[in-house]
Image (cartoon, rainbow, N blue to C red; front, side, top):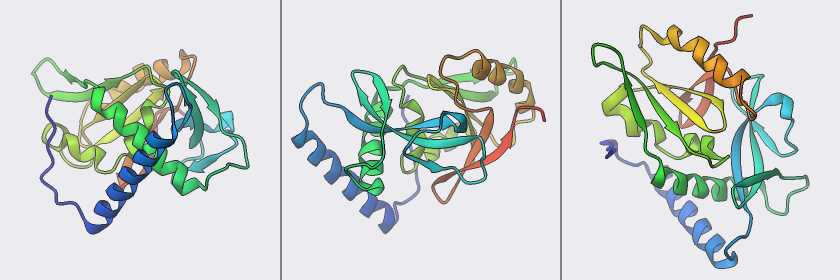
Length: 206
């Protein structure tokens, strides 16, 4: 699948891209095969990762910082050797490598209308792709602007059109993904505001 975005990059995005590229080159120069690297994982709050950032509007989900090596993640312990902004740049550089290999699956209803996009990967940091600059713009031509996202566990992400009339039909399956997973993430739906994740609503009753 080929993604496109007709939106021009702002100067801020260019600076971010340059910083990300520089950090990635530095990391590649310093690392050797098999080294661990910092990643971000959307986590349920009750995991209480030692190094984390909040998600606006959410009391149930945070951005946890981990070291990943050979597909296994271990939580970073405070204090970190590198400031959080530098760790975030390196983590998003890792997210970009995930983006290069994912193959989103388009889900349609009986009329052939797109109702969701499903993204799967075994990398525990799959959810970090949501923080990549311009990520939701990649699906404008399929879902329209301002799509919503669900991350029920570490292996799967669902994207939905904001105006989908049958979104509630996905609530039970998404809660099932969450409650039956070894690595649950959230029953919340998220959206993007100014490039950052915000909680939109919770699919868990009560």
